[in-house]
Image 1 (spheres, rainbow, N blue to C red):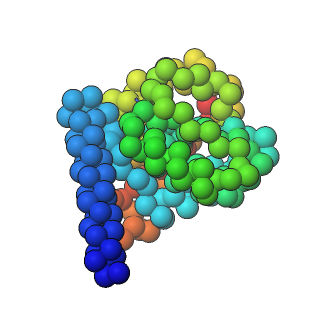
Image 2: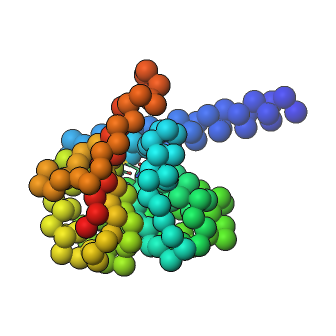
Amino acid sequence: MLVIFLLSLAFLLLLSSIFFSALFISSAWSVMVKNEAPFVPLGKEALEAVVEHLGLGERSVFFDLGCGDGRILLAVAKKYPGAEFIGVERSLLPFLLAKTRTFFWGRGRNIKVVRKNIFEIDPSSATHIFCYLFPEQTKKLLPRLQQNLRPGTKVIVCDFCFSEKDPDQVIDLSALAAPWSLKHKLYIYNF
Ligand SMILES: C[S@@+](CC[C@H](N)C(=O)[O-])C[C@H]1O[C@@H](n2cnc3c(N)ncnc32)[C@H](O)[C@@H]1O
């Protein structure tokens, strides 16, 4: 019995170390080769602030552009169950995590996760958008959003704001962060 337990434990440890090594390699690849934001999930305080400031309604359509493991989709869907949620993620491992998490914990909610490049999707149905990307990516995203979003769409950008558009509101979350964690700012735009 003990042998079976130890073997299962060793197997689980092996699987998780393979998974985390693959995640690390794919993040390094995103940064160094593709110059794209790697999978860096938002911490609890920032997550709560995003949920609070989004202010969705029953018929809202929320997009997380680069949704990582789907934590924002789940947190927002928990607070605003009647809305529609779309996560766009192109890296395989975060995408699989988001799919799995939303399958188990997002049941009964209208959540869809798609494996696509954020620059190749049509965001025109969005009423609310969140993104936490690299500065070059937010810069490239702005004209696409300006062309495609309906007036009144609310966009929250974490840390790397649009260089060519002034935010309507800036929320500094650094006072809420633990000393060892990343200090975030949220930039809120009304298009
Ligand atoms: C900093 S993480 C943020 C994850 C999540 N939004 C959160 O705040 O917890 C950025 C995510 O965007 C994804 N990403 C970066 N560039 C992308 C692109 N062009 N298309 C789709 N996803 C992208 C990355 O794979 C990564 O998971």
